[in-house]
Image 1 (cartoon, rainbow, N blue to C red):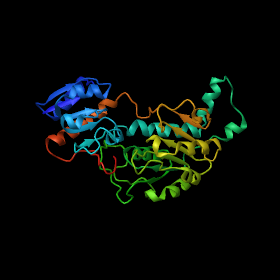
Image 2 (image 1 turned 180 degrees about the vertical axis):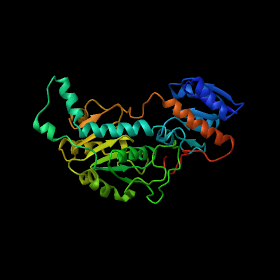
Image 3 (image 1 turned 60 degrees about the vertical axis):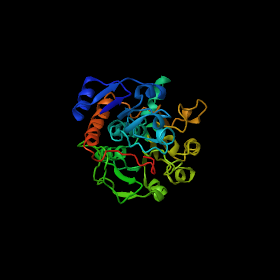
Image 4 (image 1 turned 90 degrees about the vertical axis):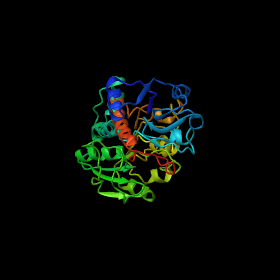
Length: 334
């Protein structure tokens, strides 16, 4: 068996991979472009661990299985592997802890007006006005609506419940509540027991009407692009706070900016955007009720440790011809 990783592996990563597939040939080299990936893969391999996939991979190389290092697969399904029969698995689940913590952190920053205090600090302004202090709130007792109840949404729900929030959730199939993907012990909501109520895709406005905070964790697919538009934003509570860590394309950015500018919703914590990097001309940069970060919510020092733990588990399954975790359904786009 030949295994190729397009990121450099640490000794502990190599040991975990080799323990999962004893006797395998393992090659790893950091590849910063799709062309470099193509050069490393050469004629092919049994398993490929990678972020990037060259456009001609399916045509020129024999690859039996691709383990992506990203939670999403839209960047390969819409291009390099469109129509390909190569099994693809994602790294869904390894981002659950950092992104759930980011989401809760963004909500806490908004509730306690930390984002405004930081801006005042830059201006050397001692902000202690009655209006400022009257706007500070608790998240305890508030309702969190989670749009997309995958691994990240489930871990966000677990943390939110610990803060005393009421959790409601929207998912493609509300009746299917079990998480069949990668879920380390003690994390998330594997059995779907935390939400007080589940909503389906046609109930987006309904869940938004009930939510004080909204966490959007949807992937980018043909079914989710512009899932939240002008009509959905109009259904939100005037003081509601929206966090998007899924994909920028799932929210109509122009409509969201207009709603934020007019204070029709309270604020937004945005880590993803329709076009990245976010254009300097975007009005989102200047809005005081927006907390903006450059697509970093999933970053953490242990990223590759978690990724290789998942890869090793899937490698064991691959060797034993058992079902793989996080297998992408091309028809659904994730």
